[in-house]
Every structure is written in structure tokens, then in C-alpha cells.
Length: 200
Image (cartoon, rainbow, N blue to C red; front, side, top):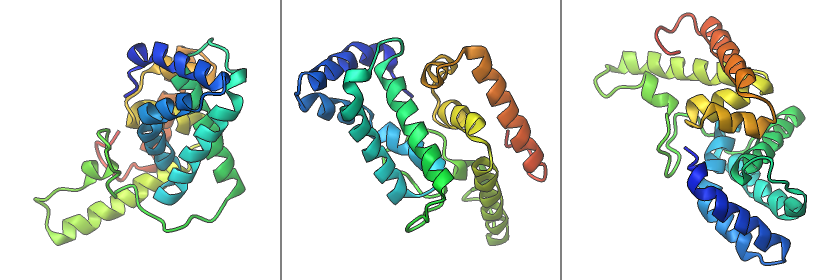
């Protein structure tokens, strides 16, 4: 989860350092947020290699556009809006993914909800685990099929544990809109996954 209150001032200082030509500002932002940005991108594209590339490109864009940042929103939510746009454009282009890795794989350093935790258990038999793996694939597919305006808030808030207010800032909208989009995402997922019980 983004610790925005604590990071806000230091993030703004980092942006000012970038604006003045000091690349250390970018290093500081990457140290604080690279892991969460990577994890967010990974949720979108289901591939570690592509997620790493998108996360790297996110910070390239941060560096290139630091002079355009206006503190209407927190720096970190601006960073995530860039990451979300890059993920959306990547999926729209339909780029071939390399070395596909399922969302069931462990993402290094991740402390947020893993989809596999919902459908896998050490206590299950091999047959039950096979069913669980099929369920996981269905969940991944259902999330992937969500339109961007629903997918972003669902991943950002539900899977990554960020607040609705932070999401509203990242999407340049209001909390009520975020709440409605998450409601619609859950409803769509429930319909797509009606054969799975108690997931959403």
C-alpha cells in the first residue's frame, strides 16, 4: 500500500531535484516506488518481463515529464497514472508477451494479495489442486477482460490495497466514481466467475 502521507514531501523534493537536473531525485523515487509500480504493472500484463519493462518506462516518463508535474495530486499517484496509461497502451497494441508467467507465480517482495492464495491450499489433493489451477486461470482471464476504466481501480485498490482517494487522484476523478467502477468490476467478475464461490 502507498504510504502517501509520509512519502509526499520527500517525493516532491525528488521531483524538484529532477527538475534542477539532479538524477539522484529519480533514484530516490525509484527506491521508494519501483517495487509497487512493478507489481501493479504485473497485475495488468501477467508477465514479469513485460512488467519490468513497463515499470522502467514509467520512471523514464517521470524523468522526462517532471517539469510538467503540477502538485494537484501526490507524486506517487501521478506515477501510477503514468504506469496505468503505459499498461493500457501496451495491451491495446496487443504486443506479444515474452516468457509468460502466471499471476500464481510469486512476485519478489510482494506483500499484497496473491490470487493464488485464494484458490490454492497445501491441504488439497492433486485433483483439487488441478481444479484450483483451472480456477486461477479463470480468475486471471476474467480480470484481463475488464475494460481499463474498471481494471485500473480494481487492481489498484482491491488487489494492491491502495485507497479509493489515491485512485481518484491517479485517474483524475472523484471517489464516488472509483467506488462505482470497483462495484461494476466486482459485478462483472462475479458474473464471469459464477461457477466459483466466495471469491469476490
